[in-house]
Image 1 (cartoon, rainbow, N blue to C red):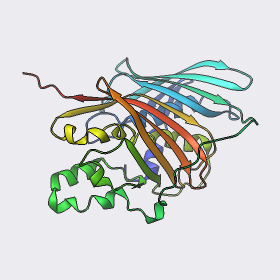
Image 2 (image 1 turned 135 degrees about the vertical axis):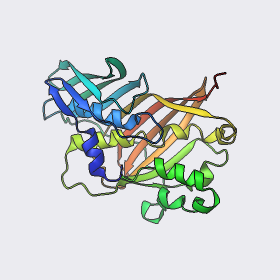
Image 3 (image 1 turned 60 degrees about the vertical axis):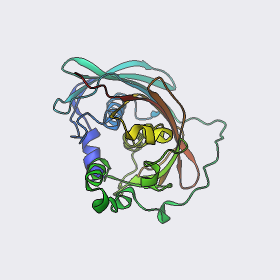
Image 4 (image 1 turned 30 degrees about the vertical axis):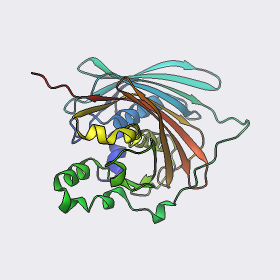
Length: 290
């Protein structure tokens, strides 16, 4: 995806009936539907059926089957409940009649109450950091195959700037902590809360599972590994703009039984905690068939 408008077009679904929507696919280099795409599209579908005074405060999703790139995805919205303050929706994503993904989302009115948060980590500001795409330039001569592979998978619609240098992080074992600043590559003209939520859902799938691989980089380099998101949860705490700098502070408390668990806190530049994320993913050695 070259521009943020392409991402917006991707997550904006075609309405085919009151509670059914159709989504197209970003053709990924790795051959399966990008998890962030389905997260953003499913949240878009859910938003189409809720009152305009309700905004999402959480979404919880399970990836059931790997999505096929050549088949559009059908999203079916189940209007589970409309309460006085909260609205609940369930979204089922299907290809060829088979469920590949399910998501539940909760929406509520803005309400007054107590307020607290953890502090933002004291890290370098994005303006002094080098974008990931610029950090891999040195590989163009030393390792052209790796350079081409990274160049094909790294997003361009978002400006991503790692706090820790990118290449050393994925060449030797390190602690399971990762921090990146990110924003859209282009400014968004209007502030539309649902759109910013959908774009954050899309972007929240970047780098999260890879945080769980950091203590095992050297072991995984000698193996053919398969990675896949299993579930994903996202909580929206405070208003934000995704076209302004956001810090994604990630850690992985555990990896076991071929699964890695990661979580993230997303802050704006003022230090406000705007969202929290959690994900478990499969990290399994590929078994060759005889």
